[in-house]
Length: 128
Image 1: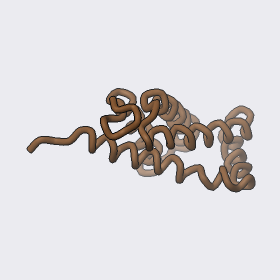
Image 2: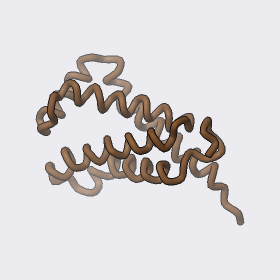
Image 3: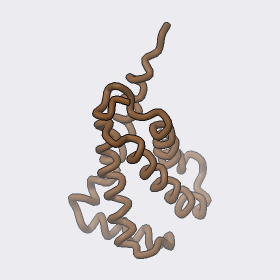
Image 4: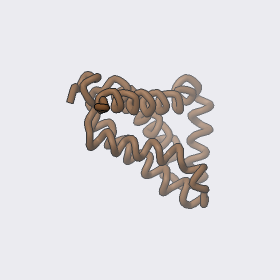
């Protein structure tokens, strides 16, 4: 049985793009949620918490959309990888989070790495 790599990449892009957008849309439409996120980041010693919050939300929103449609996939994946690497090292590891609690960030990290190396596949705007 022959596999369909392009379909597999599309499924990964739908998951990561949809999940990234879903994860931040509340911060986009509600300033109080953004401030709450900034407070969370401040508690984890992020510099300039409101700027860090807006930057992280923007990364996930825009890169999530780019990954979803398969446009500028490698760049978007690299930026998402960095965002979630920071989350793991500044939030999850210092908190002593279990592997179960860290798995959502790890999933985003590893899928981003995969898409960086593979590209978006033929079912995308990039078609690489």
